[in-house]
Length: 312
Image (tube, rainbow, N blue to C red; front, side, top):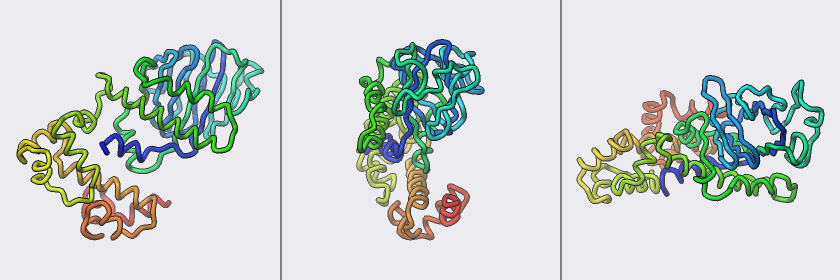
């Protein structure tokens, strides 16, 4: 188990919403689905992704875009094109004033737009994410990123195309798993790009010492780790491990472990009815009091207050 594995395990599609939109120039989609994370690709055509406060980002056919955060954005053939369709939460598609009259017709299962042979074909899938593990991954990503088709491992989103237009038993589960696969391959390709400014924890995984230390911490976060034991397990001195870990990851080994334990505890408090005592032991604290002290120091609130706020 590495860091990205752990973060992706907490970022799974459950009831993802999918759309296939087919349009002719000039075309644009106003996306207001409030999704925390979305993936999109162009099966046909090219496009620009525009978002308030950001420079428009170009997409070519086969590229995969990841859009982070619930703020609206527009996908269109040119940055200034007036949208003809608006996508609302739940994948509801609304024709806007001035749209061609045939854009009001639903073309099939999860499919909207004009004629089936339209010049632009956009496939998208969205996540509604909750939890601190997911937020930790989203914090490492820019608001909009695009990975060229040649760098994505196989035409993953194109494979989704055939599934989107079906309505068979278990279809939602099939689509969710395809969306997860698309996210994994796209993010792995993105983090490998120089302009991604990949977070320290990702870059550190290729280091033979720090990468091994990170894997140990993630494989068993509840173990009573110390810098001395991590150094012994990775075959270096304590000073060398501390220096290399801090230099690559950006924080000391025990500070990183504390942050990860608190992240795990926060999600368990939100997702389960387990006692604080039980959760404390699961993430590496001797008892509820020890977890409460660490939780309040890191988050500024108690585990119980965090659970109440999450429930509200």
